Length: 92
Image 1: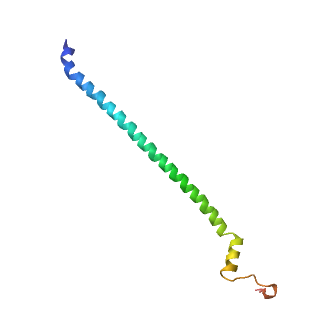
Image 2: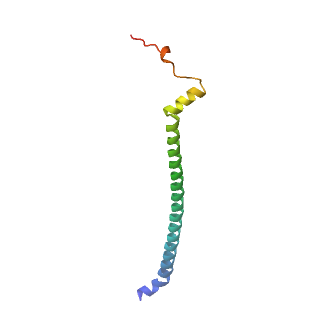
């Protein structure tokens, strides 16, 4: 008998609690999906940056190779290896 008097107050309270938890579940799933999409974008950006990094490393190794430096020295700076007769050995 005592509980029947509380039923009109408890039932709407429980109904709002269930409704509130359902809204929270929907919001949490939406946020999780947003975060997953953001994570996938970041992963794609990371992959792109790793590819650029690899390309830049290859380019750097090419630019620092002996043959390339010698070719640039010959073509742009007009530098050539000295003849054997032009080399002087200096001893301290």
